Structure formats: C-alpha cells, structure tokens
Length: 267
Image 1 (cartoon, rainbow, N blue to C red):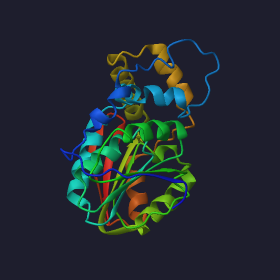
Image 2: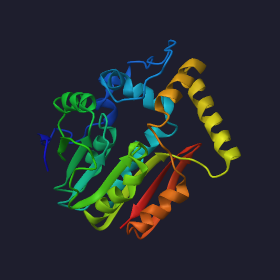
Image 3: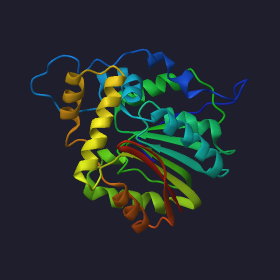
C-alpha cells in the first residue's frame, strides 16, 4: 500500500483510549460555516475549515452518528479476527477507527483511509498524543485506488454516498474480494426513499432535527445547496441488492433514523 503514514502505538497503562477523549480538542469548535449569506454556494469539500468543526457538524447533522460509531466498535469486537486488518474507509477524524481499535482482536491493525489531507493532518496530531494496543495506520489516498487485503472488518460510515454511483459496485466487489471468510462490512449512508411523499417527510424531519440542534434555516438551506450533487443517496433496497451482487451472503439493516441508515453485510 502506498502513501501510508504509519503511527504505531504501543501498550498504555490502561490499554484503552476513548474516541471521545481522542477528539475532544476539536469537540468544542462550533460549526458556523453556513451561518451567513453566501450568495452562490460552492460545492462542499472536506477542507481545513470543515475539519476544524467536523465533530460538532456531524453530531448536529447526522441522527444517530454516535450510535453508529459505538456499534462499529461492538461489531469489531464480535467479527475481527486475530492477525487481520480492520479498514476505516473515509475515516475523517478517526472516530470509527478509534472505536474499532479499542475492540479489535489480538494482533490486528486498523487502516484509516481518507483523501482529505486536512482530516488526516488533524487525526495524525491526535494519534501522536494517544497510546493504543491496536495500531492505527493512516493512508492518504482515494479509496478507489487502495488494495484491501486480509480484512475481517471494513467500515464505510457515510463514505460511499460521495463515490460516483457508477463506481460503487466495483469498489464493493474489491472490498469483498479482499476480505477473509466470515468478515463483515459496515455501510452507513444517507438514504433515499422510493416514495416521493416518504422521502420528503424524512427530509423535513431531518431538517427539524438540525433545527433542534441549533442550526438556522439559512444554515440548513445553504448546507443543502453545498452538498447537492456532491452527496448522492440511494435506497436501502439498492444498497442491499448491490451488496448481494458483489458476493455478500447476507445483508441486514441494523439502524435507521429518518433518512440515515446503517447496514451490516456478511461474507
């Protein structure tokens, strides 16, 4: 694997690092990026400004985000196999990476991949202050270009939605090919509904969730303009069928809140 920055962490006195503690230096930076009128809103990118407020942004924007991160660790505890790899594809600031690293089987490693240097730079700084029994290795790369091998757990939490639709099946097929037997893929996404009425209802409820978390109508509107055509959601049925087509033996939805859901696919 190329463009890899290895941050090997060894035994700490407690052997345990909380993802909350690991990210707390960023946790109190409030997201106000879309709080003023912008005129023509640019497409959303994961740049330095987004990285600086990302923990606040995602907690206030994605229903159930903390649950998805925590359960990624629970699934890692159940399905990681000694001597294998756990991948966090689209790792951002590493919340899922930390959750899985705390729970992984012996002699495992976590490969945290992102193409946003701003995210990885902050995660690199965080890792430098932590001690982990299971090492986390950072890789600055496009997930379409990396090799997946000896994987017992792969997490894609809110990542596939940013991949071009026509490339999604080939990516998932490669992931499946690089997994060991009895491995799992955690796939969390913003989702779309076949019924226009239901789709609009859950979009409205999601916006209500954001208002309840302190976002103004201006912020909600401008963020939506920024992310349109950058994030492209699909239905749960489409995700299920694609995963089966890629060789996964079983696919189950374990979480849904409004228009956000998470599936686990079994090899």
